[in-house]
Image 1: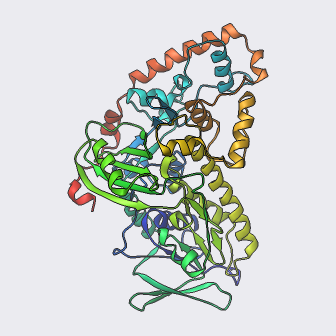
Image 2: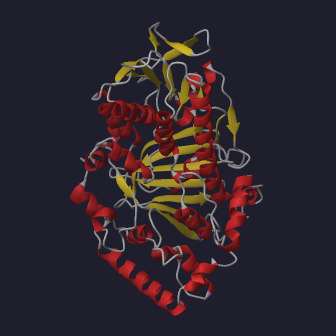
Image 3: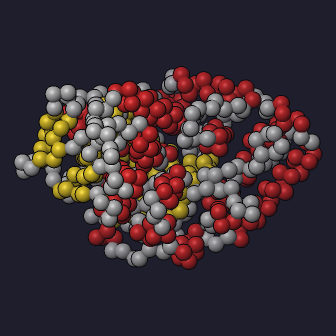
Amino acid sequence: MRAPDALRKVCIVGGGTAGWIAAAVMAHHFKGKLFEIELVESDDIGTIGVGESTIPPFMELIARLDINEQDFVRATQASFKLGIEFEDWHKKGESYFHPFGSIGQQVELSEFYQCWLKAKKAGQPFDLMDFAPAAAMAREGRFMLPFKAQKTLIGGAAYALHVDAKQVARFLRTHAEERGVKRTEGIVADARLDDRGFVETLVFKDGREVTADFFIDCSGFRALLIEKTLGVGYEDWSEWLFCDRAIAAQTQNVGPPRPYTLAHAQDAGWRWRIPLQHRTGNGHVFCSAFLSDDEATRILLDQVEGEVVAGPMVVPFKTGMRDKIWYRNVLSLGLASGFIEPLESTAIHLVYRGMDFFFRYLPDRNCDPRLAAEYNRRMAADYIEIRDFIVLHYAATQRDDTPFWRKCRDMRLPDSLHERIELFRVNGVLREGLDELFRAVSWHSVLEGMHIRPATYHPLVDRIDKAWLFEGMGQVRAQLAQVAATLPTHQEFIDAHCRADAVDLGNSVR
């Protein structure tokens, strides 16, 4: 027997990746036993299908939904992602890698990064990425599932996927509908409130209506319920993240897909390259104060590899987050809840993170505001952590060759980021947050890549014999490179285990 005020129906407004992740997760989690789930979307309203790069927690989501990974890779034309290559961010001509998984192994009581710091202080020629298994594989263009090689030096790597976002939504739609989610076609024109100010009814353009106890707003930047209906404001972060537009285009592959994302700094922003099995996603993220749409498009098309098969299209955005992601009986997800530019591929992560917290604070039909307040506090912490990590990529630059990069170099940091960097400068200690997305490996990789290094190493490292430490590091470095060179190439691995059917690019991108 259920409580009298328990939710009886949840309605998701908008499909796309966000909407269908929400639907699939709820259908799996509740198995149709708690409440009815209905998703409202219209084929006449396009979705922004450029969020095509994921991070390792996405693989956990696939596993939690009992989705066969090989089937998912084939269906979404996916390739594997071991990390991100950053070119020209600190200075032109320099590059660094942000790997997934581990870097080295802890030595006695000291984390590997501290041992590496001591080696560098002593003049050793080791680069930090020489000890990152994901970086070693990416450098050679090779791939192996790390859990299939746990007893080797690459066992500490992790991976994510490059995916076709539209195919992801399609796959998850099928998955959700097979588990009881009802899809309703229609364009929402209006919403009616009850006497509490809660959304009660959606009114379609053709006059049909849908009622529910709780609504999840996945309507993208339109934010139909959370902003248009309930009037929740938006916290603008453009004082730290200056880019506000993107040009996206898809091209035919030229050669085998690389097992990593490229983020290449440009004069007024950066461009991405995301290789899939059947095509490559490309984009130019930029600041409109320094560059026009036409100029940004020309720059992108001059640099892409392969024939353009879709686009270019312009995607305007405002970096920031909702003042309240959950308000009354509306939860916003995806672009409706906020947007942090796609530099570290966090958009999809924030969708299922938002659903995880929704389950933790699941309300009844009264939607006690104390639950929403705690939910909003936790989600705001995630957004701020990710914001600070992204800001670091820009603010630590030493580029002064364009007005955009001078503005980035001279910006005043958010206090939370400034304090984190200053603590790190002492001896490499990192501020620890609550269940943060970006752990030590990520911060170490970007801080080192942007030439921010501590004054010294942690005193505990002096417990370790220096000669033994340096000799061991040299051996591991050489062995890791040797092991990586013996692995199948990325393309060979895909061909052997999860190659997708060939597609007609002219039809697949529409």
